[in-house]
Amino acid sequence: MQIGKFKSTFAIGIWNFLGALSFAQREGCRYYAVFSGLPGVAINLKKAKTYTERMFTFRNVSNLSKNDSIMALERPLKKTDFSFDFEKIHPLLLNELDISFFEDRFERASDNEQEVLFSMAKIDSEIIKTSAILANMNIDASLLMEFLKRLNNKGLIFRPKKGRYSFTIPLIKDFLIRKQNINKH
Image (cartoon, rainbow, N blue to C red; front, side):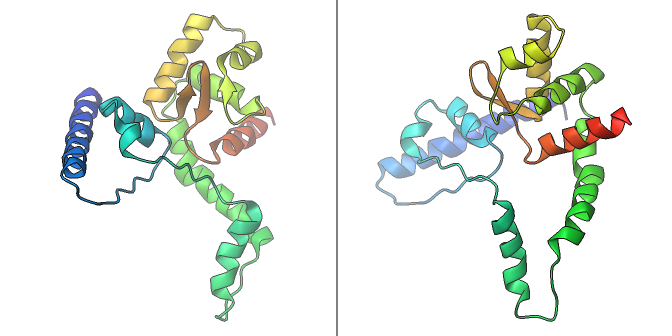
């Protein structure tokens, strides 16, 4: 199946789903619809129907802090004979994520797009201005915009606001920094 055909089929599905929810709402039905996923979920809902923000309350849920993550793993184990040593397991988990998850997604990007990702990873901000990326790279603005568009289409970044981008995948910025440090040696 072609990507464009999949995207249009997906958009039609969202449009139909939102239409059904709107009908149920007008008929007085009470319901909860919970959507979870990457930041693009809310953006795609809003693109499908312009009145989506009146239908739903959007709440962003971010990653757990390091301490909360450790507690989420340790607390259930307290009632067992098992234990969890974060300092021992953390490097193993990162290595597994790098190999089995991040690397595959990173390889979807062309060499030039990868350079844009590396440049973005150097910027100390969750939401990165296009001007900051340009300041880090020796590249024409129109060419950068094309690379950003491709990275967005590949699901590696998203555009929360005009002229601003962010990584779609949690922890990928740390992966890019690790990868860049390995490539330097």
